[in-house]
Image (tube, rainbow, N blue to C red; front, side, top):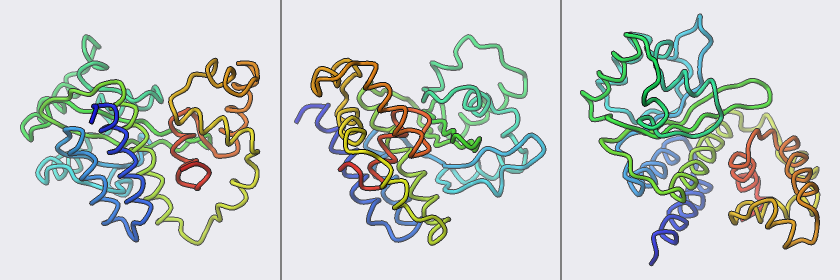
Amino acid sequence: MSDRQATANAMFDFITESSRARDDREVLACLDTAAKAFGMDCYAISGIPLPSERIDPYFMLNAWPAGWFERYVHENYVHVDPVIYRTKMSDEAFVWSEALADKPVTRAAKRVMNEATEFGMYDGYSVPLHSVGGFQAIVTFGARKVDLSQEQRGALHIISIYAHNRLRAFLSEGREPKAPAVAKVTPREREVILWCAAGKTNWEIGQILGISEKTVQHEIASASRKLNSVNRAQLIAESIRLGLIR
């Protein structure tokens, strides 16, 4: 089996198993399996608090080393953590060592990163989540070493968004029916999303469907608005969650 196939299998295994999860503990078990498949040792999912707030009530799922979680919360490191700062500034997933290298950081920020290494978190991979309504969250993984191919980064990005969506679904179960959003997506938009999930570029999708690249961009933008998604990976993950594509 090729590395690319193994990566795809790990992603779809996670999506299949977590879609059957009955509560957050089962999502945690699924994410644990996926994280280990990509060489990650620990992880957490949390909303990002406002400057005047603490992070405690925002944690949705925590599998950080116990001592680190307790210290992070007690010291309220969220407001000086350079990973969180980077997350607020961009919706692109990133490897800590790459995104933070040669960037000016405060003494407090250095302290956070240095102390994280005491718990084996020398590097990590983080996925920012920004909704069109302004909600910000993060799915973050820690490891002694991060060695992810572009395919693995993309798969872990989608896994992260899907895991976050599953947890939010449990929190809001019974409050927000999914049917209206699904019903608004047109057959052409669904077709375009399916090719996006297959890794095709806008130009390639246009060639496959016999439409212009500009029309493809329009279809993606329209579907993104309907599914409250702010980037391609989030659109794919939300489409999978809602059963639009499989």
